[in-house]
Image (cartoon, one colour):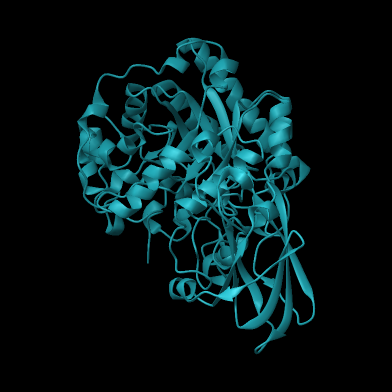
Length: 529
C-alpha cells in the first residue's frame, strides 16, 4: 500500500550550482505590493516536499537536484514549496510545530535530520535555490492535510494531545467507502480557537524565520474543515465567518512582519473552482477579495482540468485586480481505470488543458502533483516540456493539442475532494436507443491555428451503432484498432474539417441507433487538433 503522497524518486545527478549565495529575485526587491503581486508568473510549480525522502537528498546539492533543478531555463518562475505532513507536522525547522523525523517503512530515506545537522532544511534550501536563480518562492501551507488518516507515521503528537480537535474517529475510515467524505476523520476542526490560533502561529514562524516571498493557504488539501462537511453538509454562515476571520488575522500578522523586514509578504490562496463550492467548505473568496486580504489566487484541485469552470471566479478576482492561476494536476490528467490505462496524458493533453485555462482568462498556470522523477527519462521529458510550454499562450500556439471531456472515474476513491468538484459536465453519460445525448467540448484554441483536418475520438463502454454530429455537422466514424490496443473498451474515430470547429464551446450530439447488448455509455470524447 502506498503510504507517501507520491512514489519515491530514483537516483539523480547533483546540481551544486543552485547553492550559490542567495540573491533576491528582481521583482521582489521593491515595496510596491501590487507590482509584486502582478509579477509575471507563467507557471507555478507546486512541490509537495516529498523530494526530502529521496536517498540523494541527504546533502544540499543532492536535495536541489531531485526536483528543483528542473525548473531552470523553463517557464516555471514561481515555486510553491510545501513542508506539511499533517496538521502541526512539518519538514522545516519548526519550534511551534513538530519536525517530521520518522524513518520507518516508506520513510526510510527521510533526510530531514541529515539536513538539520548541516544547518539547513528543505524550505530553506528551496527558497535559497529559487532566489539564486531569479525565481519567486512561497511556502504553501496545507490547511488540513489528512494523509495521516491512513498513514500512521504522519500522525503528529499534537493530535494525540488534542483528540477533541479531530473531525471524527479512527473507525470512520473502515466504516465508510473511499468515495465518501465521512471517511476522512483525521482532519482538525476549525471551529476551535486552539486550531485557528496554532495556524496563525505556524504561519508567523515561517514568515519570520525564512526569506519567503509569500505564504500560500491551500484550502483544498484537504477541503474538510468542519464536522458539518464531514457529514455531507455545507459549512454554516458562522463557520464561513470563522475562516474569513482567520485569513484576516493571518494577513494582519503578515503586515506586522513585513514592516519589520522592509518588503511585502504576499498572501495567496488555493480555493474551489466556484463560489458555491467554496462556501460549501467554508471559504468565502469574495469576502476575502473585498477585504483586500489576498494578493493572488490559484483555482481548483485540478481534477477536471479540461473542463474546469474558471470563468466566474476569474472575473471576480480580476474585478478586484487579483491575478488568477487555474490548477492543472496530474491527479486529473490521468487515464484512470476502468476507462484508461492508468497513465498520464501526453503533452498534447496538457497543452489543451492550459489553452482552455488561458481562454478562460487565466494569468498563468499552477501545476500540481507533476514532479520530476530522477532516472525516469520519459516522464522527465513530459515534465520538462510542460514546464517549458504551458505557461504562455504564445508557446502553446500552433502546437498539436488533445481536447477532452473529463471523466469522473476517480470519484469512487477521492471522497476528500468530490464535494467541491463540479462534475456535471463529466463523462460517462448514458446513451439510450433512439435518443440523442448532447455534451459540450471546450476548445481553447483557434481552429485555424493548424492546418489539415482534426480528428474526433469517442470511447463507448460496449459496442453500439452510433451517429455523431459536431456543431450540427455529421462526422463519419470508424472503429480504431490502434486506440483499442492502448485503452479499454470500444473506440471510434473520424476526421473533422477545421471550419466545423469553434474556439470555445463545441456541441457534440451522439445518437445511439442500436446497441449490441445493454445500453452503452459514452465514456470518452477527445479532439486531436
